[in-house]
Length: 557
Figure 1 (tube, rainbow, N blue to C red):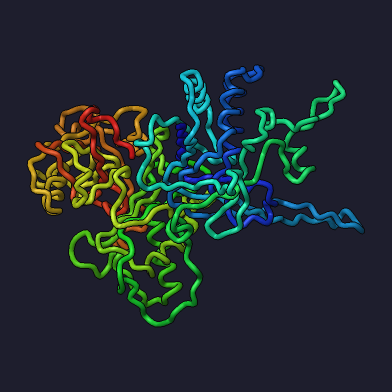
Figure 2 (figure 1 turned 120 degrees about the vertical axis):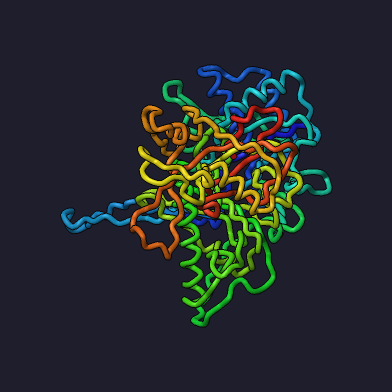
């Protein structure tokens, strides 16, 4: 058995269905075509062996994979698109002086998913040399589909490493065992290598191409465009989707509804989810110091759509955080990054609410489709990729009742900002409050949340080049004459949430934050994912530190 895992750090797979006119495509290709994987492996060979022809061992290995149609493992998926307009020069037939510029609409469809993708060949067996070749090639596969479908590919040793959240798409075969096309709601077509007729050269060259010896053969893409995307050695095959497709697997966006002018309580009704995960699609990296502004913007946009759809009198304590009982019952908006190769970069937004969301509130969140972050030049497009009652264990979000996520050591992912100012005066001449020091306030926050355990709270030193430097570093006062410089060492300046009723200043509020480490006598689960000032907007979030790693490692999630 051969299993290849492909994960998408940006949370999306971007490719049009094979052979279809991009202007008429309704959604992205899903599941991905196995032909693309064979082309990616061949491309990886040419990237790592410049100016060399594929060796006999590589040819034998790739053609071995083509002899069997693989099964494709998928998780939940959401189909989305981005739109851009290409300038189009419209020449005037009468006079060139009256020529104008128009624009042509282009839609780029992609599939957003939080789960890796899997290709499994049940009957294929690799030799030790072929496993070595495949491992080397997968290290050079950096994207899958379109170039913005950044990916990481690896070879799985056994099926025990497969997550429970995936299921398999299987090729449709006739009575003779030959692949076939089948029209059904449970089937989708993909492009595969023809097991009965495939050569490795089909990946980049048409057969029987005549060349006069002077000009090089026409590029494969140009040849396909002139022949209705026909490729030698390829075949269109229908794949049977997993049980429950598409209702169980596809996360749909909200349908437009007519606005109601009567006051509506959207929190009334059965709860359909407590946890949501959005992939934040953006053309530029979002640095973690924008955690609070991004979370505020998402919440504000949700409240805007709430009022737009259900009227100005509509209320939602879960979304807005108003009219809720005392405590942390409303939603936490937690922007985080999951790509360890880009520390300090936000890639996802996790929303968790103890009181839960109704279907009406879910529809409101799905209407948030563009956040004009920064100067608005590069908007963020949130795409829902997961929903459920509990955050998955790989997110490392602790909510107390999840007994699977426990640790003796917890460490800051985002800085903890004390709820109360811990000093008076200026930073150069402060007067500290003994009962309001940051460590004391964090202990009180843990105790108030229900965690009454002995804990050692230490400050984590800032390490140059780490994700901590994505925040604004606070310069400590020079010297120790006033005995206060140590309190401002290893601290950052963080933008915090400003309540709508706060009219003290029209400017953004910034407070000093600390990266802290919590060490307990026994493994515990934190009752809340975040603590301190602006904890509902991503500050004060802690992640567990595995026992086999030093406390200063693995802070990014």
